[in-house]
Image 1 (cartoon, rainbow, N blue to C red):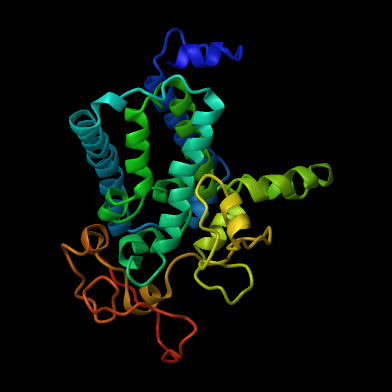
Image 2 (image 1 turned 60 degrees about the vertical axis):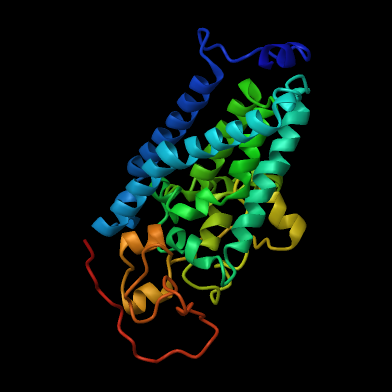
Length: 320
């Protein structure tokens, strides 16, 4: 499938010594993770800004492992099984599509639906499933996949991608798409702000104007993780794009300042203390015992626009 598709437009497959598409995809993702992590340390941004607790580390580690080893394989197996059982005649029926058509459908079926899912997860109903991603008080590649277990399991884009794989979207097109998408997402979360020096180069201003409106960058995505919106830089009520920031531009949720918020995280954690990693990862199966928490039935969601008690000290809770 992939060979015929690329040869039809005279595009050579990557020179990988007969490497399979999935292997190439995994290598690309690992190189992106290692590269951004290396730049975090080389720039000393990690040492200066990432002050993670054991609670943070457990949440991020267990979520990454569960996503790679459980959620993604489960979704793929489920979609393949459902397809083979009830829609066997459709298996591979779109395998001969041109690469650009497959790529376009992936942008709509995977990335656009992830934008919509992400946007919906900031509603009161779904916020507990996404809150863990915002509870980190730092930006880094290490917290890219930090979320609630059910947030990914219920993500429409994962299931649509599984269905598209059943229909024939595997091979080099999907491998390159996923590798490119995750590279952009990792870069947007990275503590090393790769876009910052580029804004200062006069000759690149027109290019960066296009870039920051097309893909997620540290400036736009850090704004989404800001502690507050009140400084004019933070914008946690928008900037929902994952791979493409273009969705925010098209749907009116974009906020572009080329600046970075001074503080990251959630104000209710600053006031009441950090939620336990298990409550963040497994809500609603496991619920919080904190007095003011969104991670329990009937819980409260912090709103910075509502009057709060004055003179509250920042909590310093250490969770195992």
